[in-house]
Length: 380
Ligand SMILES: Cc1cc2nc3c(=O)[nH]c(=O)nc-3n(C[C@H](O)[C@H](O)[C@H](O)COP(=O)(O)O)c2cc1C
Image 1: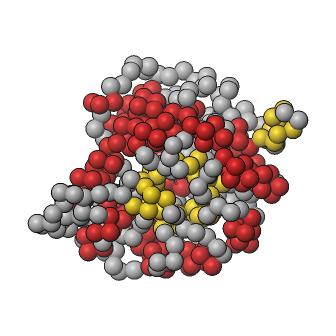
Image 2: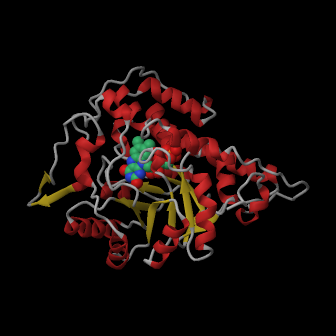
Image 3: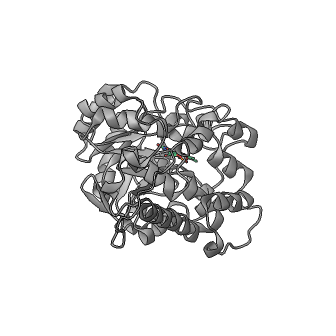
């Protein structure tokens, strides 16, 4: 449970909320300044945060007329999984900073919406407890820390719990510097912890290392959860160590994407960590088509960063993504109204995506092709 007092505890009637941006305003009023600052913030001057959102808008949608869309479907496949819609919940840390029910509220909403959840390594709820509640696929996001034995055990736990895949985050050799974390004094409130990164020692759960209550930035509080010496050999090691499909998350360049496929990756996640790592990294809408070009049909490409409307989902698919992930929108739903809020956010995105397909003349996701967009995406 978060010990942080909420600022305006009034209940939200989620049916009256019609956009992710409205949910952000509601969450902002209800979250502690520390939690809101941690969720919203990005690295440096937050240029990449803003660019992620703006870059989708650089593409107008060139609607096709007189297409029979009466029997359309948003269904797709990813890694052999049948998905009702090409949408996943991105891994974001510490959902109990947003709501006392934390990741359990999120998985309930995912179940109701049929949207898979990628669980962060630094979730505030045990992976097994989330998986036990899940009726949708759960993927594990992995940070590889200094203790590779622990990583192997964590992977075994993910396999035993029924996870469908692993996303290895590859953009975090160190934590980005986020001014808002310093200003609001980022810390773990009493009762909120990175419970999955504990060793089981004779039934007792002990911290691997680090001081979870030190304040200031995520690097100071959770620096021990990552390592700065990862190389392509570690991706190869991971692919050969686990039976689960592995997707590196945080790929921006075509040469890296090809290298990841050679290393055994089953998919690629184009991401800049929501602008939280290197400020100045390109928006993902711009990296995506280059990466798609590089990998061809070898593996599916997933993208996240700045997706706020169903039309953005359509744009991402037109640029070659198989599916998209949403990060902050889920946290805004959670902070505003718990699982009902997350469900409403997912419902809005799914409904908007379905409407965008209908209005642009697409009866199936395969109809969402590059010619549907104006803009400079062909100039790679
Ligand atoms: C508060 C917060 C925590 C995050 N925690 C993680 C994490 O633990 N692991 C990870 O790989 N990415 C993490 N991310 C990045 C997201 O997975 C995703 O790349 C990003 O949020 C997508 O951008 P969006 O928030 O604009 O949708 C986090 C993002 C936010 C906003």
